[in-house]
Image 1: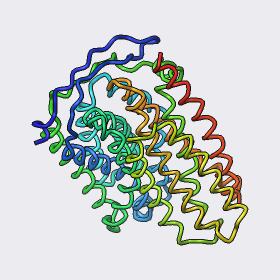
Image 2: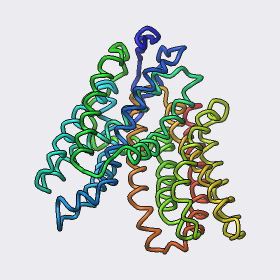
Image 3: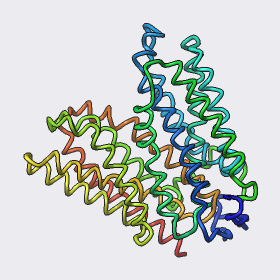
Image 4: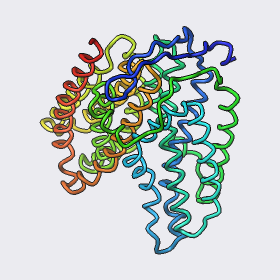
Length: 398
């Protein structure tokens, strides 16, 4: 059915300054293929599971590899995103999102099934690095394809839905994973392989994007000197820096352990809300305004300790709006699939940098600094993203 309700997307492109694709005019679908969107979102949940399956089985993994630094099996995927995020965007723009997704799922399936054998620890780490490459391509290529398939009216909603993939995937993994590492890795690898087959059948070959050459080191210069490509990534990196650190330390800092499961959930709700609001409000305004609202709410929590926990829930709900607005901004600012792939690559890169750095920084400051840091991040995020989106909008008007 997805094939029947899609138009063949063909893109005519002209080269922009510095080699970035300019403003192609695609023949967009007038109806969103929701079944295919749901299948792509399911593939995103599998991508989230690449983090979750190891995070949730560190105990059994430590027993299988006594004396080995098993925690690095989690962070290895984030390091791939930091180093190669932009290259993943370039690869997706070069071979097209359909091929990129199918290849990444196949690689993830093979690596996951190999991990289920619990090989020697260096081999396990090598498989995690390979899987990290698959993860990176998935989180760049899937939203690129989802944005291209969505009808213009639904695009913000679809991107808001995508913004929830990590939290939902992690929560589902926590519900279904058992105690053993090997069975969890085998099941995850099998699901990745199954999803590759499903999407090979569902994604029409007629969805064609303008292609770019294979990625080069110069792509970093192109992206980070082109505001419409880097503005969404800037906001996402700042958001990621704060989110994981606050989810980790706020419950203890506020003596409210019940916040631990609540904060990620309200972030998901906020991202879904952002997708709906982005139909009528510019995503850049959602991001900058969301950061400012976060700073104000956390400031009120600092001044009103008795209500700090409840106010923190509200602030983290707003942070979800920031995340959803950032994902919605990628297709809003960039009309071509190749540009969207580059922007999603930058988003993955800065998001991983934020995730990697935020928790250690707050740990060094001490958990008691959670609210002051949240206020500072909100103020900085509001100013930085307002300037970035203003530059992006000016460039697009020209």
